[in-house]
Amino acid sequence: MSKQKEIFLQKSEEVAFDLKHRKTIKFNISKYDVAVDRGMKRYSNLDLAKSRASYIKSQAVNNLHDYLLEFEKNITANGASVIWAENEGEAIDEIKKILIENNSKTVVKSKSMTTEEIELNEHLEEIGVESLETDLGEYIVQLAGEKPYHIVTPCMHKSRQDIAELFTEKFNTPEGSSPEYLTDFVRKKLREKFTLADVGITGANFMVADVGGICLTENEGNALMTVSFPKIHIVIAGIEKVIPRMKDLGLMWPILAAHGTGQQISVYNSLITGPKKDEETDGPEKMIVILLDNKRTALFQNDDQYTALKCIRCGACLNACPIYRNVGGYTYDATYSGPIGSVITPFFKGLKEYNHLSSACSVCGKCTEVCPVKIPLHHMLLINRRDAVRAGAGGFLWNQGMKGYEFAFSKRERLDLMGGKTKNTFALLGAKALGDNKQLPKLADQSFSKQWTNKK
Image (cartoon, rainbow, N blue to C red; front, side, top):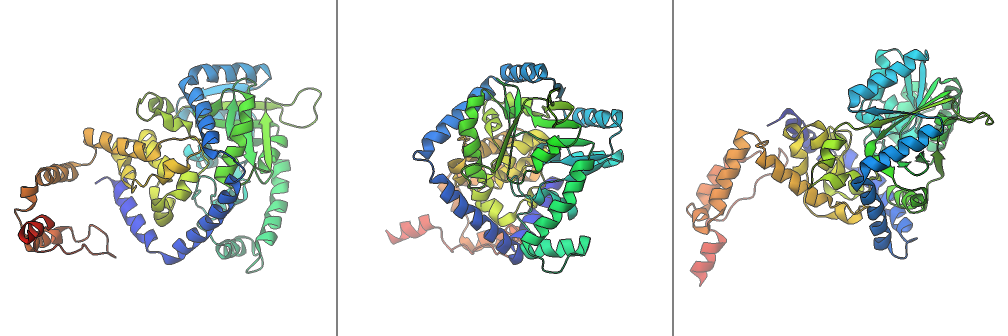
């Protein structure tokens, strides 16, 4: 058993029986469910909207090379620079180089899972650069010394009381402060940081090939301020974020908002095509876009799984997943959790170490049902399981156990060789299979097959 699998099993058991945690998650996701149900009602034909969004992303993924070159050509024509990074090491080195060359000491960041993927904050600390999250949820988990719990809602695991206690501990704010008070407190605190920051770093919800622009979708305005105040704007985006045309945003922006937060459209939607022009007074003087591969090309080359690159990071599959709702985001021990994370993490971090995530699935198909770009997620998880077996990634005991299982279950008479008492005795060897809080059910003295035969 891999170390990661051991951690997963231990954490999942702890979290699943943490009643306070489950109550918080249940409450927060229930709010999401109500909002999304309302948001979906704007569509007279939701399935058609999903089909069109799926087609746009399929077109982008199937012609990824061409659209990326088109994007690079158009955004560089507007004065931005483009850097291609094969892996997280190259991306980090390029960012450090930019910061050192410009003597930068303070960085403000908008919400970006791609920067979490390369662990940017930790690397910037190594060179003495302060990196501050400006999304409220990200700011809260950074303050707590934690990672984002959820792709869209970083502090979903915290209640309002938890957050109030955290701010009292860190800033001596009044105990039991309201969300409104704390939001205003953070707003004032971050305003100064925006004006003093040397560099602003963002991700990109989409990269539009035909105009050479990066899209930022948000509800707080912090991403726009991250771009506007600092003199240098660095974008870090996975190569799969490209879409063909600007007119595609008319569909993609609303469908992302509807599935991500239940809104008809997010409050702020920005399309940035380069640094400020000579006649403009606001905006960065330099804009650098880092296109990150980081094994996405390996995923692209997999004929069975490459369509996972269509993902628009709405988080809908996480909220729908019964496993995620019970074991939580941190249990996955990966940047991307839930169903989509279980599909792509074995590609990004290694099949041998992370193939167990593909088994953290009941194959209910809810993730596939809610996906706005129609990725067959539960089917892909089954393919990951198949590939893990073919690669022998389950370990010696697991592989031998599965061979024994196949031998026993391939013929009815083999199952009936032993009675229920003998089977229950052998079951004691795996008494902990369901964890410390559950017990294996007792088997009947005779199998159903024998009982049926005897009855006849």
